[in-house]
Image 1 (cartoon, rainbow, N blue to C red):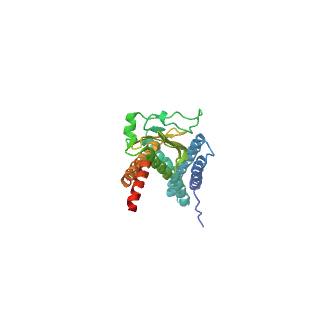
Image 2: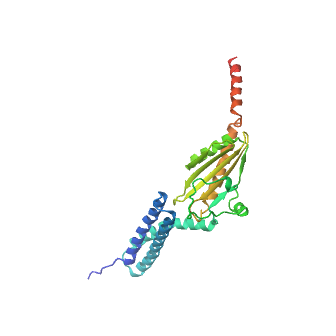
Image 3: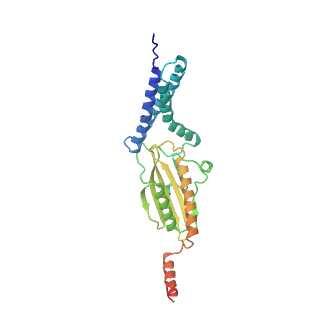
Length: 272
């Protein structure tokens, strides 16, 4: 007599839920990044995908336990469901750790925000009020978010800022060439599709410059530390770039007219 070994229905459902969870997570992110759904709908879609992924993990664990006891078939399906569920939950685990690590803040700046205005902030009721840190909290969480002062003129410093923004791939939305003030506003998109705006302001003279920066999330209730970390990373890169420029170009602050006069004076000497 032939004994039939059945396939566990729990294992089948584990595989099905896991197979659904992965495309749900990817689809929600893709639609949000391409602005095919609003941020509010993205949050709902992400929650639904997370619930499906969690169910896939739970059902997979139940299936593995039953398979161990019953000897039924379906180990491959149960393990596949568990793998798909865990992969789908990985982003939630990562952002959950950031949620616990950083305070609920959406707007970080080195100076008064009135001097660092956002240029494409939607003026709608749906736009949440910015969440900011006190000076003490900022110093504790992001100690390197500070105004920078360089022994380099306003114009070359602003040029370095533009180069770094281009290297980061940020989408420039406003560019005010330096007169007394140089300002640059750019849009940054995070991996899940949240939009954030960066403002860099450069003031100073021909031999000195001051750089301030702001980074703010749009339509978000928490930035997961992105704005503060972005400013710290950018200003650290700016410190290095300015240092290299001054090291390799000792006459970086020399006015263009003075350079031209010096060149004219050296040409007759070279001819003689």
